[in-house]
Length: 171
Image (cartoon, rainbow, N blue to C red; front, side, top):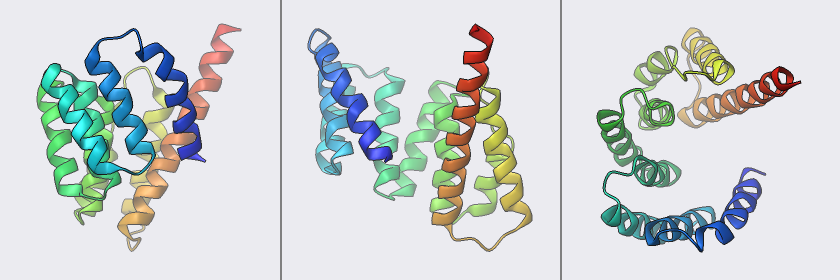
């Protein structure tokens, strides 16, 4: 389901990328490759885009996400640490840094980090991830894959609640 939603999002973005700078077009192609499971091509395209826009946090996030998806948690951790050094507190990088630590077997450190997770202006994103991390700290024994899945599910629940809150505030 997530892959289908990602592919739809990418397909919608492709026409917009046609009039953008070359790095954006390359990044969109990298996202298509990532969604299709061609991780080598995705990394190649993201690195090409990063060479054109070396200050881009977004492109660096895509590289980190690709490593994370490949389950190369050490490289993912390094990528997300680099992002946080450049943009302290960046929520996506903070989240995936914690998840990468869990993936590479440093479960307690990852959960402790995520139990203090902050996402300014996104209360429910933050709350649901924190609550799940605290719960998992209290009840150890889950596999890293299960923990990562539960935390990503918690983030998704938080996103849905946040959308409802923001929609209700507009009404």
